[in-house]
Amino acid sequence: MDVAIIGAGVGGLTAALAIHHLGVDCRVRVYESAREIKPLGVGINLLPHCGRELTDLGVVDGLRSVAVEPKEFGWFTHHGQLIHTEPCGLRAGYAYPHFSIHRGDLQMVLYEAVKERLGPDCVVTAHRCTGVEEDGATLHFDGQHSRKADLAIAADGINSVIRQQFYPGEGPPVFSKVNIWRGVTHHKPFLSGGTICRVGGIFTTHKAVIYPIRNDIDGKRTQLVN
Image 1 (cartoon, rainbow, N blue to C red):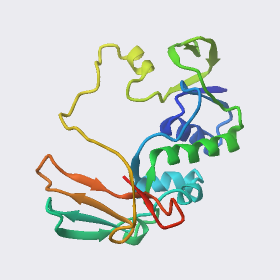
Image 2 (image 1 turned 135 degrees about the vertical axis):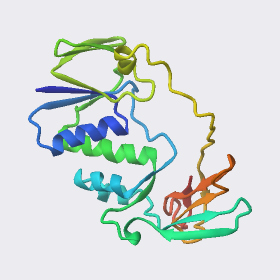
Image 3 (image 1 turned 180 degrees about the vertical axis):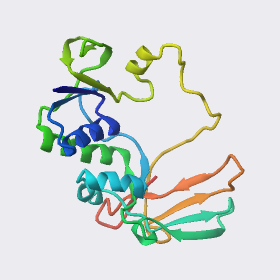
Image 4 (image 1 turned 60 degrees about the horizontal axis):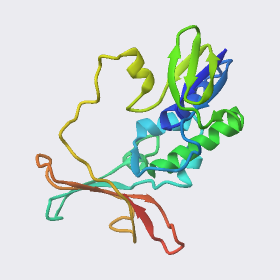
């Protein structure tokens, strides 16, 4: 059986690894619109329930080499006064780790694992899918030949072309009226060196979340902080 996955982001690459891990007898191809896969994004947290899946997929060692395993959660008032701390991940008694990681680092760990296990030509770049026909599955691409498969998995993001095709009346994502400004900076370790800080009240709209996502980026213990 031929399986086509549309999108080589975190979801698409994880789906490819899961199919391989389950031992499904099939050929998998992942089609990505970008010409080159680059480590883009900012910080995300992979909590222990996610760590369990990533452990099963055998990528935890790769993640541990590029991520921060946070030690604690910390809650602070909007003046910076400490309210409460508690351990997280393995320190909190979970059986699986918690990682704070740059989204691009996560994607590249998954990408390298997919190429190693499914073959170096498994991920096909510069293929922007424009639609699919249900005859088995025929995938159409912008400026590229169509490809046939027995099954197609749409992992092409929040603005999914395939979802729009199957649910044309659904409309765009609903805006929650909350804006988030995100970014990263370089900083020496603060507090425990692995504290996820939530600064600001629960019932206020103005708050900050601050946590490290890479350790020792310059040989001087400087961290990359989200």
